[in-house]
Amino acid sequence: MTTSQEELLPGTRRALLHRIAVAQAEGRTPSLVATVVRGGRAVWHGSRTSVDGHGPDENVQYRIGSITKTFTAVLVLRLRDEGVLDLGDPLEKHVPGTGAGEATIAELLAHTAGLAAESPGPWWERTPGALRPELSDVLGERPFLHPVGRRHHYSNPGYTLLGAVVEKLRGAPWEEVLRREVLEPLGLDRTSAQPRAPHAGGWAVHPWADVMLPEPTEDLGRMAAAGQLWSTTGDLAKFAAFLANGDDRVLSAETVREMRTPAAPAEVADVVDGASYGLGLQIQHRDGRLLVGHSGSLPGFLANLTISVADDVAAVVLANCTSGPMLSSVGADLVRIVAEAEPRIPDPWRPLPEVDAGVMELAGQWYWGTHAFALRLTSEGGVSMGPLSGGGRRSRFHANGDGTWTGLEGYYAGELLRAVRRPDGSVSHLDLGSFVFTREPYDEGAPVPGGVDPEGWRGIG
Image (tube, rainbow, N blue to C red):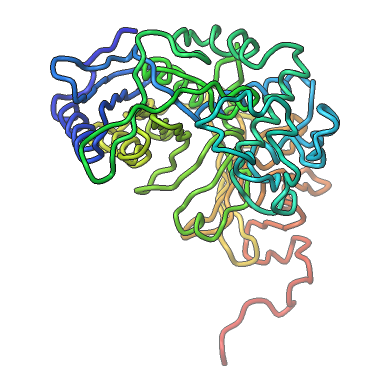
């Protein structure tokens, strides 16, 4: 992988290096490696290590733990996009007899299936997967701890079930399907289920002394789809670009956007923290920007992938210690440093290539009651509707090709917008999900629900 260090300003590069140096020193990790992505490719790489004269590069593998879940989610959404399954399907339809069959595919993806966080028995991350050869061993006798679909409760067994869905519907092992459908198309040749040299060793650092203990490296067996993978900052940089922009060889831009959309009810603490979960992706509002990605950990390793789509900046941070630096904070800081020091230069404004006169007629100011809204034509061929000032309901709308539009976001997502015309062809009003929008506040010439007082507007006298 070729990395152009010159694409970031010297001051930015030094700030990035300082941030990971502080993380490695204060977090007391044997090594820490990071990469920043901008414009769809890596533009900076840095590392810090306790070994003199050696620094891991973007090709050294670390174990990435639960970032594996995002890869598994990609495989499941490929099945959905091909029509092989529906996100509303119950698990029982595809993998019967688990005892958790009432949970839907979407609920498993979003960790809202009500399943336990961990597998019963000994600490599964530090013991051989051979101890849990069957799904029943992973789920235990009491798989559900909460009502299905009611709350977000992170579940490693849930993603084990999704791995089983992939294997059942593809007729091949999860690892083989992943390699064929995701790793090879995206060129992630340093991502694998088993470590490949060069790779870092996993360590536990004593909490009260500067000494270390090697951690065991276990094959997770049945639970591989929840956390098995090893990868590099170089490969995860490519994966970050894919999650931001899509790649039609794997998933469309529309589907990865769906992955980045909140899909789980947040706990009260999560609301306070500005955190949510999509379909295989963690979502957080931090320092005024929306960040998506995933963190990961297994004994001996920590990992984080953070993306700001709006800033066109992503960061990957990997470390080889069981606990220590808060890599989610480091990743967010690396994104912030680049976004603030070298903000994204917007694409040039360009006029629309053509415009429908009938749509152009609708542009401008409208009123819902006395609340002023503006309808604008968008560069994508649709329209947008939002308050002229202050907060309120707003949305972009996709043109349906028949003179109507469907809402894409917020309160009006899925709602139909149409222009209602009089017999002479002139526009009477807009109908948006039964709400009447008029050119004047409570226009007496439009069918305002409840009617308009015939005496009209008046003062106090």
